[in-house]
Image 1: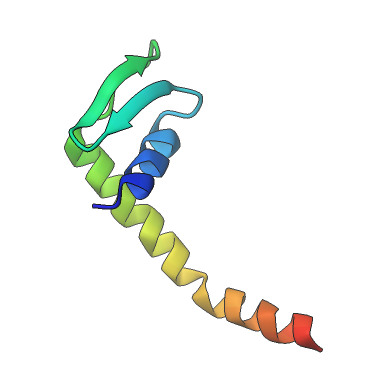
Image 2: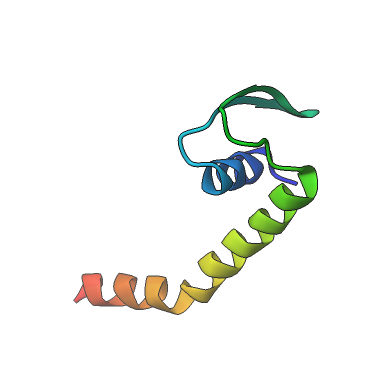
Length: 68
């Protein structure tokens, strides 16, 4: 999966957590909160993508209205 999307998912799951992430996964975790599992991160990536996809119509309409 896209590294950027996985980092966004981690930030969504644990706001304000500090972490380092590379191609192997989370390498350092700087938070008192529990580190999310790979399965939780995968599920959050899918959820965030679904939210983004559901707003496609609104994004297209805004572009058309801005052109007026």
